[in-house]
Image 1: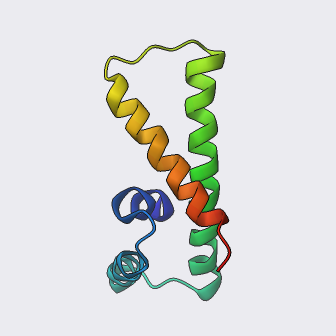
Image 2 (image 1 turned 30 degrees about the vertical axis):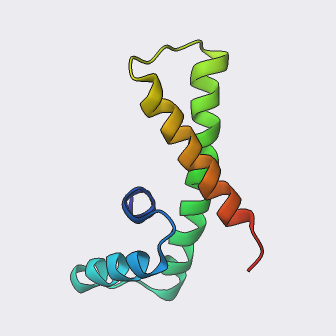
Length: 88
């Protein structure tokens, strides 16, 4: 849930991630392994959300009323995937 929330709110802004994680840890501290897994979950969420949109549109033939919003969402997923795949 933390990965999905921060991935949606701050995308790939590292400072935003640090701020969000710090705020969460004020309420419930996280082990180092949990913090590492949040990053892994975020990366997998990006890939899976892209695949989900493709499945909904091309396999299931779903139609959505706000086509520009859907295209913007898919564009953002693609940008995030490119940034996550970039070296460094």
